[in-house]
Length: 144
Length: 144
DNA sequence: TTTAATTCGGACAAATTTATCCGAATTAAA
DNA sequence: TTTAATTCGGATAAATTTGTCCGAATTAAA
Ligand code: FES
Ligand code: FES
Image 1 (cartoon, rainbow over the protein chains, first blue to last red):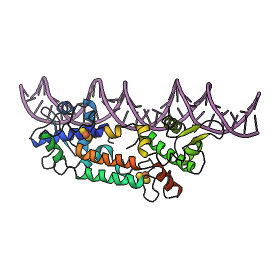
Image 2: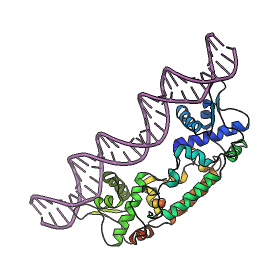
Image 3: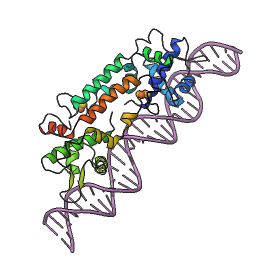
Image 4: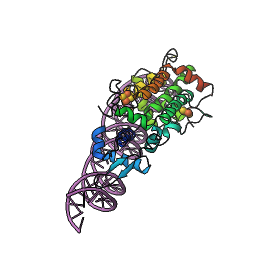
């Protein structure tokens, strides 16, 4: 469904959000320990997310990654996915035709777009805040 | 969503089904021309599908691929996907945890499994017959 | 001012997926 | 029986994704 980069990215951002809600910063080591992901690769992903202004990065001692507390509620899952995997998830054809096009639909177009639209709605309606909160309250996990 | 192998496979099978409904066999060249896919790679995919008994292959002049007319209605999209991509689409976690597990859910588990279940239902309820028929009647396309 | 902790960025490496090549096997037709 | 059309299967190559390494830049603290 999502690329590895995207999976790590989502997990990382949720963790960073949780820390940020507690007024704390998360360092790369901190993050990779918490989400159990490869350090150097995760660093690249975080860099991408920083460029996309989804997270904030600070160098130097006591540096790390954070997200403005006010932004956490407005950031949606869709933005993270978009920053890392682009929009192929929306515009691609389920059977691999160049683009999805209702005028010359592939045989699964109708059924596929219906599910994809559900997915899109879900991503657009899911806020970082609710994900971070479920983590904070111990209802959900980022590694296992 | 699906691997390239799976995309080609689905398109190929739909085309083979259409031909089979018209009492005709489809050769590899025929197929790759019709679905616009790489020949050698598609051959591998067809081999897998033949091993999985989803299609029938015949060597020699006038050989090719076919599907028993009676089977076309009973073959579901889910079987094709399963033969080529396995069941990771069902049991995988949306955020990449080892497996999806409701007892220690990742933060997107509920929303993700709900959509995935829709997808599963769709794949299980979509028959090759209806896909091949929509192609036959010119309502849908396998290349563009 | 020096040091140490951190992210950044580029080059590289490994793994996986996608794709090609080619000879072997099979089989229908000439 | 020979030939030609076809799938089969193994080896290999190209492309993409995933992952690592390491020095440079930044910056807070000693
Ligand atoms: S054309 Fe294939 S999903 Fe729309
Ligand atoms: S645990 Fe992540 S989707 Fe179920």
